[in-house]
Image (cartoon, rainbow, N blue to C red; front, side, top):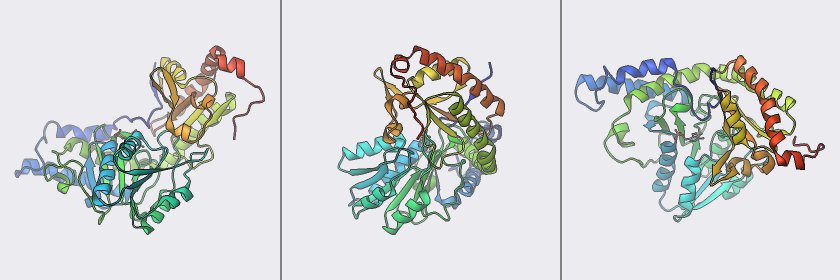
Amino acid sequence: MTLVYLDNNATTRVAREVLDAMLPYFSDHYGNPSSMHTFGGRVGREIETARERVANLLGATPREIIFTSCGTESDNTAIWSALRSNPGKKHVITSRVEHPAIKNLCEHLSKNGYRVSYVPVDQNGELDIEFLKDQLSDDTALVSIMWANNETGVIFPVEEIAELVKKKGIVFHTDAVQAVGKIPMDLSRIPVDMLSLSGHKIHAPKGIGVLYVRKGTKFSPFLIGGHQEKGRRGGTENAASMVGLGIAADLARDHLKEMNTTVKRLRDKLEEALVRQIPNTLVNGKGANRLPNTLSIDFEFIEGESILLMLNELNICASSGSACTSGSLEPSHVLRAMGVPFTAAHGSIRFSLSTRTTEDEINFVIEKMPPIIDRLRALSPFWNQTRDPSHDLSR
Ligand code: PLP
């Protein structure tokens, strides 16, 4: 059975070109870029080429690119840097729907002397900008708002937020881990101070990320050590992965149009077919501007995990919008923040496509989903007992 991989927001396959570019750095070019000899120096030069490539993808300059180990490290570095650079300020603004890399750190901060404001979202997953504006104060050290949501794909108006935060002279960070490579981005035009990205979401390997830091932004390192990354991130460079990420950045730029045409068309086809064929479904973020590759869809009165298990038997990979914790299936904080009814949020599935996704794969999923949902609903006491034929989830 061939694999149908529709979980690209979780991670992506390393592109062939990326792997080919990386391999020599494990064998022939293993020198330390900090060494005085030419052998190591050559590796250093290739890292600088990779930095230029990443900068080109973002509309940044190479000096503004700091390589890290992952999106989580980039997010943590950005937040700690803003707080350490503004020691008198004790307030942070973020959204209710951030990835745990931001959310859990903010929860930690609120237990350790900081005040955190969480900007709510509406039922489409769109941000309450007025609330955000009202929260900005002289005590605010940082605003951190993701560019696009990993579960629903809802895109936030980062340009507008960056402008209004900048007017107040407050540091603005955006977690763009899901947005990079899926929507165009030009930081020479948008006053973002810091931005996080992660290699494994754009066909580079796991274990490499980037923190963009705009020139002039006060910066305090998270990993204090050697002089690597101009003293902004200590630790001997992960040269192979940096080189790989450079190639992946070029590929992402080349594939941006395809992402917003072919991939979007396949996502729309999947969405339209599932909603048409299966009653009591709800598309999360339907009314919002969304990433072209993401479909978050709820099937009422059944559990997402059961759907995933049945998809898994067919070698179809997707994700669910709930987390199995201590035996109870708790809908994700994102769907709860959007006010998705519990009966729907429990049956939430995320399909995330890539430029490798084929029409045949989408057709296969479209064919297999209705009988899976039928079988599970036939077993569901909620579906059988509480189903009201007039019940309409569409909104
Ligand atoms: N931020 C977002 C929005 C993500 O989706 C993820 C990963 O899923 C991360 C941060 C964390 O990135 P990493 O896995 O590279 O630590």
